[in-house]
Structures are given as C-alpha cells and as structure tokens.
Length: 206
Image (cartoon, rainbow, N blue to C red; front, side, top):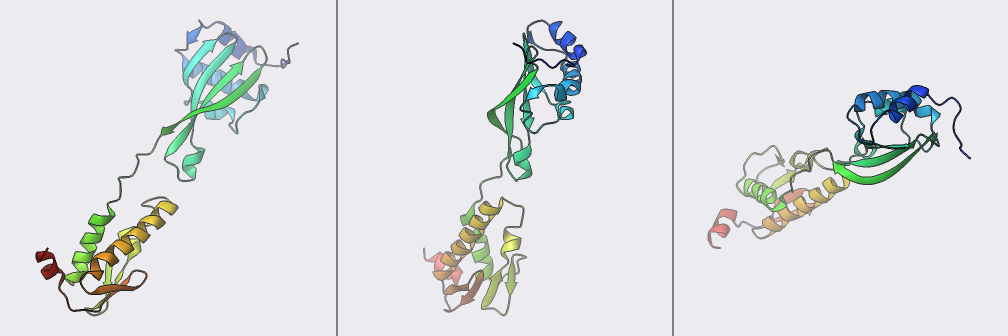
C-alpha cells in the first residue's frame, strides 16, 4: 500500500518521468520543481528547506522511480570547520518521500599553513637579545620585555583550541632559547634578563 500524498505536485512528477534514466543534464529545472514540491514529501528534511536546493544540487541522477542527488551542507563551517558535509538525497516518487545520508566531507576552506613555532621563536628571541624594536614585543628598559602574544598569533589566525596550543608552544619555545643565554620567563609572556651573557656570542661558539 502506497503512502502517497494526494496533492503531490504533478509538474514535478511529469518532468521526472519524462527523463531518461541516468545523469540529469537540465539540473536547474529539476531544482526549481523539486524546491516547489519539497514540503509535499514526507521523511527527514535534514533541516533543509526547499529553496536551499536552488543552485546547489550536484550529481543528479534519475533512477526510476527515484531521483538521487548530492548537496554540500555548510553548517559545520559556521562553527569554524574548514570542511563541509556532503549529503546524498533520495527522492522516491512512488512513495513521495525524501531520505538523506551523509556520504563524506569536502574541504571548502584552504587549510592553514603549518605553524613553524621554532622559526617564529627564533625571530623573537633574536629581537629580544638584540634589544630590537618589534611590534610583537613591549619593552620596559633593556632587561624586561613582554611578548604580545596577540600580535604574534592574532585572534582568528587559527581555531580556538589550535590557537591556544600554538600560543603556549611559542612562549615556551622563546623561553627555552632565552634561558640558554641568561634570560628567563618570570610569568606568562614576560621575560627578564638575569645574566649578562650575549646571545650572539653564544651562537658564535656553537
């Protein structure tokens, strides 16, 4: 027994049944007609309204009595992910149902370059030991300096957890370099000189 919806749009039904089985060439027409019929289909809508189909359906195929297509969903990217969910939808014209399943993920935002903590720490340590002005550093005299971690690694330069981890590794890497030549991190991001050993001389002996 069919659970067909009596008022299911005939235009969408007629168009699909006129198609040759296989890939659909005129996707725009299918999108328009399916969007209009979307609310007349029972089943899981996956939180997607009909108008969201327009311009987004891909790999559309007519497999009588089913219309199968893929669509890219970007909900995760709103939360900071660089990857979109790829869904496969099956619209059954006999049962007047729609069904969705996740079939993969797609990189939609270029992945950030790997952060070279050693190289950046070396730049900062060199600047500190040379007493050099740097927008990432705030000096108070010649023997006390604060690493402006928000300048070195700005908000938005990575995801929240990744950014916190990078900042921690950077301040510790700077501290490790400075500790070998008489500077010490006295509190987070603050370095003070406690010995009069020159960094350049120490480097020359290596």
